[in-house]
Image (spheres, helix red, strand yellow):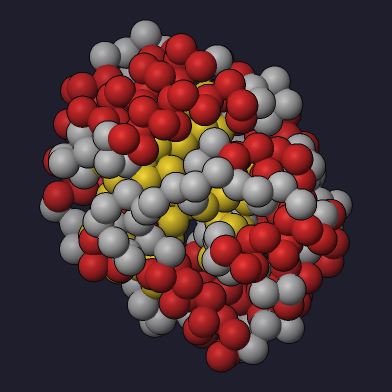
Length: 324
């Protein structure tokens, strides 16, 4: 089973999915008819992590109104439904909305209402830009806390791991946890295993990417023994240059070491991927069997934060992470 069509019928959940990275070229042209198809395609071609950031920034700068956000939400959910995704935790970059000087409440109301019309169970993760600092993250956490009973399930941080170390956000994570939010963090993507340890120490329950954990045997054992999942995005890591090639990706080593993993698309339009395609890639490139992939698919439900797919609607108890 090495073709995406082999997995399209499987019921699936996705946990690491950025709304702003899901804007397909045709949707972009719908938002801005002045753009030519060639222009959009050129913008979606990039090299390396900085090239990806430039493309992402180009996209978000063209999301000018709440209606634009609603449009891209509906388009994303149509594609997820075609993939037989039944449950999705979608990350909305609230920090970027604030950075653009937009009012957040109408934007969130637009995406929340758009999602309500879908057959997919949708919950939202509000994401702060970590290199914008702790005060910025606190603003995003407060926005999330205000909506904890209105569709927002979790708070997280993304952005530059080295310019925004996790320790800056200890108090913000404590606030979010106290408000009933679940906690995730991008870590171990561009930076090494120390970044993952730091995210765990401030309370992250899931790790976005986390693949460089493979460089630290004690961390791998900790993730395995505590059942802490990594939200793995294979194609994303290759296209941003985090790993040099698909063959170099450590997903198989992490899985074989017993680390819980889920498969995700991250920014599917920018990377040109689908969730079914990621399952096919895992089978084709890394030899995952059908039984193994069904177990990974089940992980996405097992480690979901809320709703019919999740383990508990309440925030998980948190304890300081002991370092070896």
